[in-house]
Image (tube, rainbow, N blue to C red; front, side, top):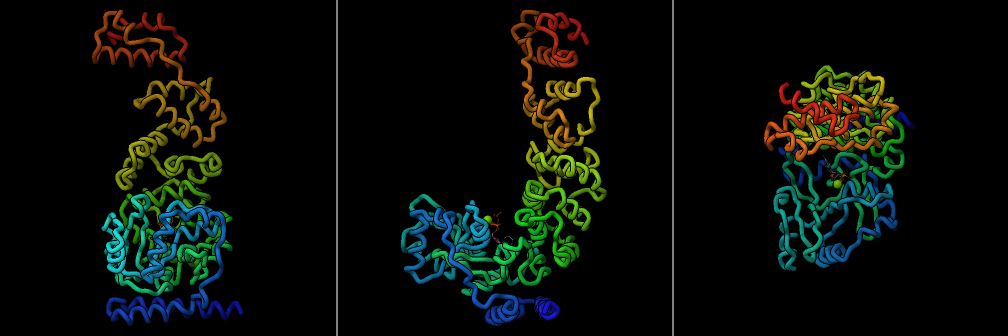
Length: 456
Ligand SMILES: Nc1ccn([C@@H]2O[C@H](COP(=O)(O)OP(=O)(O)OP(=O)(O)O)[C@@H](O)[C@H]2O)c(=O)n1
Ligand SMILES: [Mg+2]
């Protein structure tokens, strides 16, 4: 029985590969749809409606505006359903953050309909790929995308053909768990056993994994992100999927650093982040996403094991792979990090080596006042450093209030120092002196040092 189903699966996979070796582009539009459908059928469910959803999360998505949108499509005789991520989330009992809609109406049909009904449409950039965004009652926007197949993909951009076949739109999606539709009456349409995979906590591509990945190489990272989201155990990957991922990893080179970082960050913030990063490194994916070729995977393993429970910032965990500050600078060049993320990467690498002092927190407290960043920001970054090291003093450091520097500008003016660069320089030196003396000096004691510091 098991052998039998494996045989069928292999045959299907062969068939998929054969088809994609002759480009879809060479076929006529009708031939394309027919061929894809023929290919998909053996892997799909005969009756796609698997249940009726009635959960409170589902009910909570209905607003007056959504009801108006749905009535409009009904009136004009077009089908509309919720698609992809939101269906997955609802089936997991999660209220989705955003809803994507799919429809049998073409973009032109939608435009005609909304124009006739005097519904404003915004952001027409998506039209080429089938997306129209009506704004209902001047209150709520809905992204509605025409069912489509991807005719040509270069791994980043798609040339699309519209269709009214729901199965084919499901087939072009990345993972089975992301390929379901939800009718507004609660009917769940699941062509590729996404619900079964969700229940089994399995992350697998729709149809042929190679094809799905080559349509958009970012899907490699999406695989790991969704693994973190739905799997129950750290390292229970489908070996065949990992093999295909490894074979295609070099395609990630052509994906923009910003897109990679958006995805990678979510992996680093999710479940099993450290384990997933280890897999990413061990399957030789790291160099293609802009990580150094000689990443320190042992350090990552150590940090994950000791500090994984501490909710590390994505950058903190990622920094464990970096060998030095140059690596952090290179990472920023590829990922276009935010200013804080960039500073944090450099800072963690610079300060992660334990600092020895009879009073273990003192070097960190001193640094808060002495670093080039503002004290609050330095404290935040140092908290990450202490988490990185799973320091027993973490809690104490977080609770520590940054002491108020006792000397004011007015006091310095009374010492004959003019407002301006000289005062700034003296103030900084005084602050360092104060920190170096463990914050124990009073204003008078500090002011005594002014003439000395002025000369130095
Ligand atoms: N590279 C991609 C990106 C998206 N999709 C499809 O488009 C849907 C919406 O994409 P997106 O919003 O990026 O992801 P979600 O699955 O909705 O996840 P999230 O909750 O993070 O938004 C996905 O569910 C999937 O069906 C895809 O097939 N391939
Ligand atoms: Mg989404």
